[in-house]
Length: 179
Image (cartoon, rainbow, N blue to C red; front, side):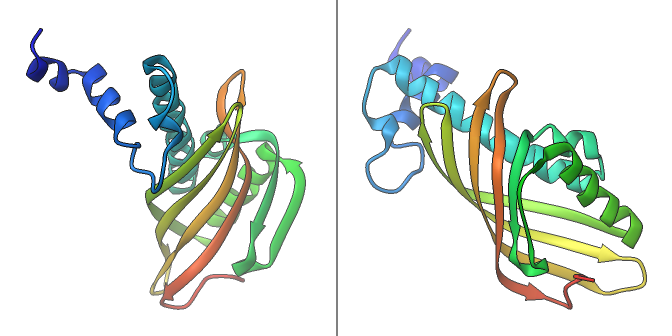
C-alpha cells in the first residue's frame, strides 16, 4: 500500500486527525502517545459526540427513551434560561420531563450542534458543544436559541453517557417559550 492509499483509508484518516490534534486548540492529548492511544482517543471522542447527538435526536423526535439513552442513571442539570437546577436526578425521569413538556406545549424542535471541544481524562470527560435550536410552538412564531452546552461525561458499561448537562444561552431570536 502506498502513502496515498493509506491516507484514503479510515486508519489513515484517524491517524492524521490524531496527529493534527483532532480539531482541538492548543496541544491535544491525542498528539502524544502511541498510535493505539491516539485511535482510542478518537474513538472515545466520536462516542461522546454521538452521545450528544442522541440528546438532540431524543428531543427532536420527542422520544424519551432515546433521550434517556444519552444520560447516565443519575445526572445533574442546569438550564439557567428556565431557572432549572437539579442534582443527582434520574436521567430517565429528566428525559421524560423534557419530552413530556414539548408534547404538552405542542413544541417541535430541531437542534444543530457543532464546535465540539472535548477533554478526555480516563473514564471521564468534559465538553463544550455549540448549539442552535429552532423551536416551533403551534400558533406561535419560531423561537431560535443559540448557546452552548457545558457537559461532563462518564464511560459506563453501555458506553459514554452525559453525567451533567448545563445549557448557557448566547442569543435568542423570537420570544422564548419558558412558561
